[in-house]
Every structure is written in C-alpha cells, then in structure tokens.
Image 1 (cartoon, rainbow, N blue to C red):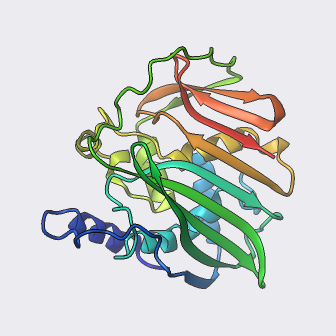
Image 2 (cartoon, rainbow, N blue to C red):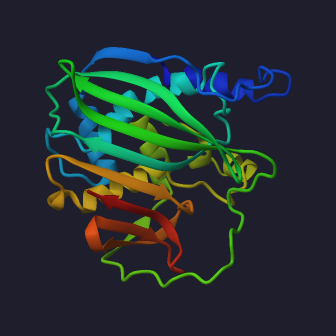
Length: 274
C-alpha cells in the first residue's frame, strides 16, 4: 500500500500558489490502481472496533475494508489526473455493499478507480470506487462521493432556510469527544487536519474540528450491528458536519433507515440498509 503521509504532503504542496499543477481535467482519470494480498492486522482491527464502537470479533465491520484500501484510493485522488484537489474536498456520500462476511484471516485484493464526474450547484462531484476481492471473487464494494467546492468557501455556512421536518425521536444519545478526531485518524490513516486541528478547520470554514464522516457511519453501523444480515448495502448521505465536541442523537427509521441529528434536530447523516 502507498504511504498515506507522503500523499498528504503531496496534496498540501500542490495547494500552494504556483505548485498546483495548473488547470485540472474535467474527466475522471483513465487509470485503475490495484494492490493484492492485503492482510488484516488483528491489532489494528481491534483498535478500529474500539474507536467506532463495534464488538471485538474476527468478522470485519462493513466499514473496515474502506480503511484497509484507503491509501490506494488516496493515491488515486492525489494523482495529477484527478479532477478535484484533495485539499478542501468534502465527502458527501458513501455506499458500501457487503456480498458476504469477510473474516480477519482472509487477505483482500483491492482495486480503485474514479467515475461519473458531474457538476454540482456548489462545485463538482466524482465517485471513487474501491473493490475488495478474495480469490478473484468480489466480496466488498465501496463508492465514496466527493465534492470539490468552487467559489466561496464555508463548510459551516447556512444552507436553505425552508421549513425543516421534525427530527425523529432518538433511540440513543452519544457524546462525541474531541479525541474522536485524532483517534479515528490513527485507525483510518485519514489524517486530514480539519478533523484534528482547530486552525486547519477554520481555514476551511469550520469553527472547530469536525468528526470524520466515515467515523459517523461506522458508529451508526455499530449501533445496528445485531440487526445486520450477512449480505447488504448500506448507503449514507453526509449532511451537516459533526463538530468536536458535541452531543448527537441516533435514530432508527422505517424500512431500514437510520439518522444522526444534532440537539436542534438538524441532520448530520441520513442512511439506509437494504
């Protein structure tokens, strides 16, 4: 796997004036990256389970292969042909399909590629696909949708002020402590400083660091762990960021839905399992 630290340094250097590499292409890069035989580190898995609230078992949580293959996807996103600069990118959605349970004694082959670049009213979106296989059989697939904001920055800015439906009654309340940013960065390899540094968060429009979106998704799946089948698709849309620290309300919804709201009833995350 590529070294994530070097890739983040490349992205930060590319954001400096005069070093950004010029105009970026509009299309997704015509490249697929692959790494075979990625073994599960059981100590890493246990640390991840603790940070996200999963039980300690040899079965991989649905979100763990995302962490295993993240350096490969990061290598794709920091390449010169990727149409959105990594600095300031916003993770707006994620869909994971688990075809069958994956255990810690299985090594995974990963491939990643980008597809479906498209305009958005706040910039441009693109999907980064990460596929995990065992013995030539696809067992896991993740699709992360990223938004590259163009024009005025402001991750903490207000959106539409229309009438908001009431938030569903919460089945649990969680206190999200400041250490969640650093803890998840450690177990995920995603060291974007907006999750760990107040200064960096303010540079991108957030008054304080925010939780990783994939931590929020994992924490919700940990709450649903006893209800999940062996094969399923779980999709989430990331709405408002979760500031650190904060208190959030988790709710289950009809037809396999779930949501995470703040104390004012505004949604942080809305998802479904099917």
